[in-house]
Image (cartoon, rainbow, N blue to C red; front, side, top):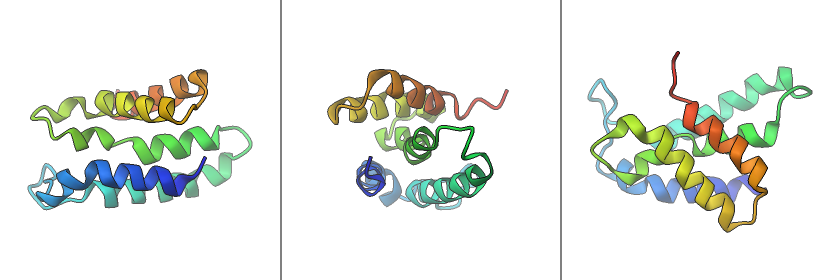
Length: 116
């Protein structure tokens, strides 16, 4: 799995959202792609202590794709996680990624905003 290709795909998918000045709840301009890079970097730092017990590749893919749903530019952003899981699955299928692994990764993405 080439993470540079994944990042490029997600950056392209989020370009329209970021170009119109996607706004955080605070109303401040916010780059979803920059956020994605930060989340990925923090996830890799935190994962270092658990590298023997977690699926690093799944975490990497989920971190990179977790907010791609914002790229759909829908009015209803409350479903960006579910939308992102669908977009990630489509991408993974297009590159022949194993279905059972895609199920796990996409489940992580779909639930990443569930604060309960």
